[in-house]
Each structure stands twice: as C-alpha cells, then as structure tokens.
Length: 586
Image 1 (tube, one colour):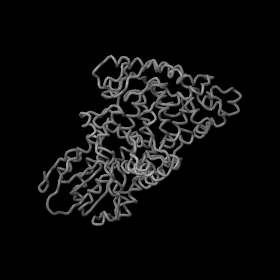
Image 2: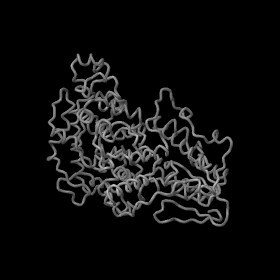
Image 3: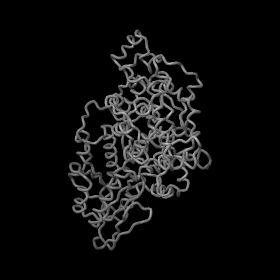
Image 4: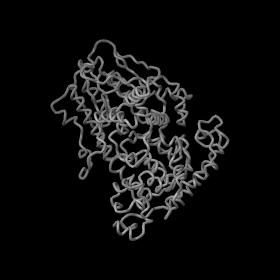
C-alpha cells in the first residue's frame, strides 16, 4: 500500500476504506451508476466533505450500448436521467463527466490524469456489481486512492438481513417480513447536495467539456430515432421528485391508504407512477419510505404504519436480498432457488408473444403497450407472464425475462428475474392451479374494450361483446369491423382451456416429484399436504381448490360459457402475495 495510507474494514460496511493521513490536496470523483440523484446520496456527500475538487462521472461503454439487450426506451430514459443530473450539477457550478470506456480501463487513466486521491460510489448488492467493484477497489488501492461507499439503493443492509437468517437469504416474502421486524429502523435520507454543501469544493471544467464529456444522443449510440414518439416516462431526478409529490397528494388513495381497485384507467401510464425512477435511483427508496410514513402518521393521527404500506418497496428489497449472493439468479440451470422445469423451446411462439401477435387481444395489447411505452401495470405483467410460461405456451421464464429486460423501463436484474421465477411457479412458491384467463381477465378489467382499441387499432371496429374474443364474432360483424380474423388479425395461437389444463397437470406432477425429496432448500417453497412443519409456506390442499382450477381455464374457448357473478369474483381475486408482487406505483 502506498505511503501515507492505512486500511480498515468496518463491520457491516460493504466496502474497504483506504484512509488518507496528513495534509494533502483532496481531489475526489463520485462514480454514478444507479443512484442518479443529488438527494439522499450519502456516498457523494461523504466524498465532498473536506475535498478541494470534485468530478462526478458516469462511465458509458458505447460498444455495450449497441450490443446489449436494452431497448431504445430504456436508453432514452437513462440519457434523460444523465441530462437532468448534469443540469442539476450546473446549478452548483459543477458538471457531469460522461466517460466512454470500460471501468477497469478508465479508472487507472483518470486516477493519474486528474491526480485523484478519493473516490466514492453507491453500494451495489448484485453479484456482477460486487465483482466489478472489487476490481475497481483493487485498482484504487494500488493507486493510493481512498474509497468511500454507502448503502442507499436499498432500505436495509442485505448482509444484515441474511445474517439474521443464518447467512442464507429468506425464500418467502412472509419470512422476509419477519426478519426485517428485527432490523434496526431504516436510516433517514442524507441531506440533499446543495451549493452550501459544495461551497468549498470546485469542479475543474474545460471549455471543450461538452465535446469530451457531454451526454451522448441516441443517434450517437447507434439508435434510429425516426418515428420515435414523445416519452411517456421522462427520465430524471426532477421528474421523479415531482411524481412523488403527486403520488402522495392523491386524495382517493391517501384517505384510507388502500390500493385502488383495478379498472381500465389503471392500465394506462400514470403521472404518479414511480417504478422507473426507483429502478434508476432518480428517486430514493428511503425518501419514498419516510414520505409515506410521515403522511400515514399525519392522516392516521400518529398510528404506527403497517408493513403493507411499504409493499412495493419491500418486495423490491426481498428480491434484492434473495439475489445478492446468487450469480445464477437470472437462470434456471445452476440456480439453487429455482425449480428445474422442462420447458418447451418454441422460438416461433416466443416471437408471437413478444411481438403481440398471439391472437388474444388482451395479451397483444399489453405487449404492444410495453414495446411502445416501456411500462405495463403489474397485473398486466402477471397476465402475460402466466400466458408465456405455465398458463399457455410452456416457454421458459428466462425468455420472458429477457424480453422485459429489453423493453421494461423499470426492469431490474434482481426484481425482474425474481418476479419471473415467482409467476412461472419456479420459485417463491405460487399457486400453480391459478391461471389468468387471456379473455376473461381483460374483459372484467375493462368491459368496454377501450384499452384494446388504444393499442390494437385494427380491432377498433369490434363491439365490446367480441373485442376480447374476436374469433367468436360472426362473419358479418368481422366484415363490418373491417377486420377479418385470420386475415387482418391472427387467430388464437393456442386453445387456452386445453393448453392451461395440460400445463396445470404438468406443473402438478413436477411439484409432486419434488416433494419426494426431503432436505432440498427448494422444499421451503414446495406445498405440503400435512402443514408447514416449520417451513415458511403453509401447507396447501390442492384437492380443495380443484374447483378454482376449473373456473380459471373455462374462458378462452370459442363461444365460452358465461360465468356466474360468484365465479367471476372468485377468479378475480388473486392470492394475497400476487396482489403485491411486481406492484408498480400508480
């Protein structure tokens, strides 16, 4: 280690801190990755203290931009986040330095060129991030650069949660909730970086800064932008904070702190939606947490908020925890928490699903909205995930996860993979006998069919009676709608009732075989007919729910049988867990 530096490892602090000794000029850099904000950024705050110069950097690999599985909407959102961050830094007489290259190539060069003595960044809990950061910490140590890292992308220290669980991640949300009840309170957000915080710290800015370090355009990254519509979700901290205030002002929700009932408007992008901003760190999860807490106590006269108030944040935290030490979390093979299911390989069927050409208007409208706007409602995600995997097509959740990774603005490695495993019954045990109907679910949500007409204009002429199953419309109705099924819009690619019946039986057999093996970690998620026996999942009697299985697959048959009101209510109510997982702020 270089002279003048000492090393120290703090318990529970996820970083190696190299500390300076003696008087010297402190030139610091803050490395933005996620956490694209100036509010609640404790690592940036710590880096500024006592520093003489500050450069805020974002490292962008242009080659990666052109080859990665990330679509144009996600790249646009990221670039808007960087532009907003640069604008905020300008108000503090600073700038954002966007540097092209790989971190392992960039840092040795800028350590030397800028005579850096300190660097900071937000802790990354995901396996790839930890491996990358370990390599950078080694380079920093060799260069005599002090490293400062703080947790601010999650509410808790994930390592502490796992320590409470004997060093293992909790495999059910219920058990996760029990663990966090024993955690220290969530830390308050750090103070926002202001001109007062920055007053003794200068940023060296050259005249050719924009040319060397400016935020690139989509065209520079190789994207075609002709015909690109205005972003439904503008990126950036400024937008995220405004949305948070609107979110908290919604009187209909605030009055009772209840989740709004699902309706047609719920399916559309909301000006109070927050999920992409939390994913990119434009909005602090801790700020959101404490704003919710304060508002609840104000409305409920200082009552203690229930854990359910923080459902979206805690599901996010749960998946981060389960993925933290599992580099195979996004794969079936080699993944210790994933049931090994012999999924079918069907590239043609996968392409129809991804492109919104299944012949089921409800599924196709959802996938069209996802491709156009980069967001879909959490129950719409449930519907298309079920259809692709255990419901109809029996295609691996890994394939669906990749499509969401490309198109979904809030796609997050841990949360995306965890949600797909959960909804495909591959982990975090889900009720495999509950199946979303690609006709009935949409019809109950939006009886008029306006959502279908918005995203599938080819079906605009169909009356509400047939818009969810247009193949059942008489020939004269199809001609009047100027859309003949099989000619202008595809016929259904599967017979839903038959496909779902077969797939439920396949899943049942897989879980029955798994239950024969005791001692497997997966058994924490496998149902047992004799109670939980200490497991985190209560025993489930599948025979008693057979009627539900029948109800959930009836619709989707040509000229399907109309369900009774009681049956519709039964099918409409998902399990408690499914009403929370993948929930997006509305």
